[in-house]
Length: 335
Ligand code: CUA
Picture 1 (cartoon, rainbow, N blue to C red):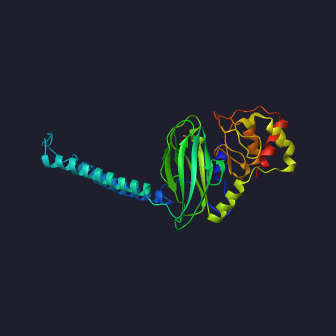
Picture 2 (cartoon, helix red, strand yellow):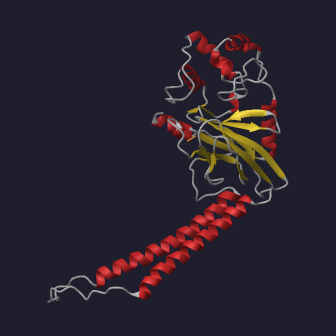
Picture 3 (cartoon, rainbow, N blue to C red):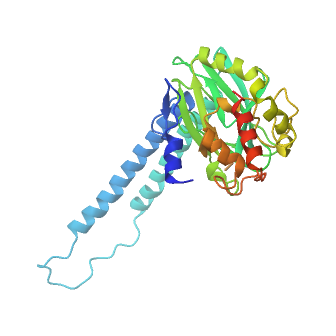
């Protein structure tokens, strides 16, 4: 992706919502992230104090015991071997510091994991794939990809519980402003929760090396006011749009190999290997965040996904110009 592409990607903005483009752990917007932010500050304060003490002593020693022009002897200073007090001090103090850090960390981990859920919760299953995220809304009966819509409430009265699984290798779910990292591991189920306090787009990424396109396994959590979230969910529950103007394109799409990997609900396309495309046009990005979802980029992506995302598991289908135009116009009808 070119630098321009990177900027374009960064500048995608949902009207009326704040986009948190920088993945800043020092600017938390959810309870787990806040708890981790506080413990990070505490750890930084302790390590800064250690740095000042050790660095200060080194500077003091260098200055105080430097060689002066008035020194007449060339002898070494008196050598001191062994001091029980000093050795005891530099053994016991670091051990105490380590135990304090372990204790505080364990308390935060336990308090995040054992927090009781608020009245209103949303349950999601996020499944890691090379190199995209499948997002299942089991209570609503639809599946989407890479962009996770969740409700946000400033008083923490709603939270989203994520069940994390993997289809292939180990991945890691990380949206720094909402929570710490949690791995997605094959044949194992992990859990985490988030409660965004402000509507907005929170960007994240896979945080566990998972193959060639690991760096382009990007994530967006789109936190919305509960009303907006419900509206979005109701739209997603509908079967794919059946625009009469796209009927020829739709029929032709059904004859292409695309349907073996992608699902478009309400059509013969029921593949499970790639992202569900039922409401593709409701997404901001393509290819797990590598391109902004524009007509031009969609065309480039369908034409040859290996150019924007080399090594990704979607091949170029070598479509003719006419087929390509039809696929793009059909996909664009999937509002
Ligand atoms: Cu998935 Cu790194």
